Image (cartoon, rainbow, N blue to C red; front, side, top):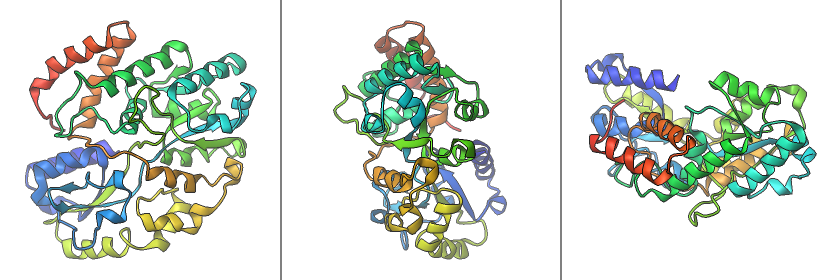
Length: 360
């Protein structure tokens, strides 16, 4: 897993075992700033062939430290509202009704889906806060401020996101699942009418050939009472990084320059083979992104997802998204139990904000 890879890389750099490091690693955007801020000298700057302006704005900056660019942005992680049109129609709605939603309208539709079909709208894992992440980034906000420090007290976007999350759970439009496997089976087995997460989930949805033609994709909802929130967000995404002292840094740089940083034919192939939604601007004209998919009723979903990528606000993820989310998951349970949102955020800020930046 990404967490296991990150932990292994951290251990090797901590003990100085440079020859045991890979020449190239794919590192998730949520984790790279921890490595760059603590081990910048271990990574090879790629300014000679990585131009940030050639990529989607939301995926540049996270791969930089100061003026140095260290990563080749790869998959975008653009989020989408994947939904079962047949179940939505049974609730009295159509494709047009699912576009450019607010979260409030999404909840309203979810209630009708539950009433008319008996299905939940979403499967939710309380320890996996993708919904909160989507809401925050859609508004250009995060758990941290612009300097990467914990920002809970006074974080109005987080406060609104917590309120929306609570309303979804309390309203009964969600079904709780304990892990990723149950999450996937939630939409495979029609326990949930929709999936709200990164574009990469499409590969899993496509595995259920019996559901071909029933699925569609729309923009993620926006936060109605948050003026900065837009119908675009991201979950995940990653970049390629070179370890300067692993042994073949020069050759690794040449490889990245000639492949993921520039080879549009390769990107087009990966769009077909692994459903890659690339962050490279030039790749949006690739042939496989222009195709309508019968599974999605002929919708050109990858063309849509790429167009939404350029609307995603850029945020500073800080250095420990997952560590922070362990605490966010706990405070959400307090809020679901009825405690005041502002007070909970203030209490957790006082308890955890004084500890400074945490480590992996």
